[in-house]
Image (cartoon, rainbow, N blue to C red):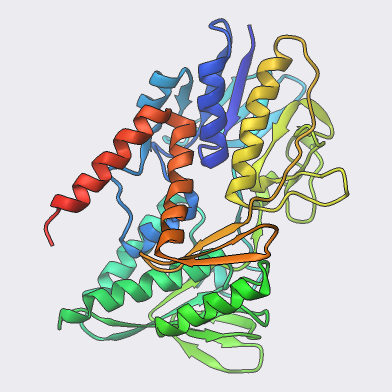
Length: 402
């Protein structure tokens, strides 16, 4: 009998828990350690913050889902690992510390925003790293929208998260413009690079910028933030940007507490360094994947921090571990980039295909963005459950009050 403990209930963690739970022998045990009670797909955190997320149909309860898919949900947060004793150290919701034995440990806790030690950013900005932060952001945005005045929002970082948040908030403000008591949101999207989506193709950046300008988002390129106060940001050249709410969505890193945890090797971004098999370099019984892992490829490159990469790594590791439990060797994870899809508002998205040579945009591409989410649901719950959710979603949209 083997006990497989998975830390982190995000996209990668939930997918691998679901696949292993349905695949391993009945003598083996799969445990998902996650402090939240429900799963939210991280690429949609900006929708939670903007109040456009459907929490009824697009969340998963770990407890009931685990019962139906062969794994157990242990509500707690990882704090340390005792490699010698093969024990995970966790903190439960009541604050108590506990230990959990494992034969194989999989760490899939994702990443957080990197504030680059900017003065005041941690204290005065909202972040979208956890479901709780996304919900707290919506509470503040909701109050702002009800004020009936002209309000300003600063968003630092024009990568996918910051761009999607800016567009979603702009569309919400536009739709509420018919209400004389709703606030008008003025949105500043601030980026240190010379274009939005700096890690994407140039043509994709150009199309995204045009769409943001159509939504009247004030895009500020080549602009670095030097400090943040409760109601303003100051740029490196001394410009003051006043705001009612401020978000930080620039850069990523693994949480600070993960750095060299249990004596494992980590890099400058606190990511655990792994072999191409996804096993950590110092311990073959501990694996890491997703944004918290530095995953090498045969050509010397690193797997990029994308949801599709986490999904493919989860599928690979689930199959690998099932085979490994039967005595077969671990196979290397080979990642082939399938392009990039960025949602810009409720009904528009931009996508790259064919190694970034083809740029697609429009309503149909926005449906593709939703399809990626449905494929995630298919992985964790199966085809029939995903099909039912699609049908219920369409019926809900058809019959909901306008």
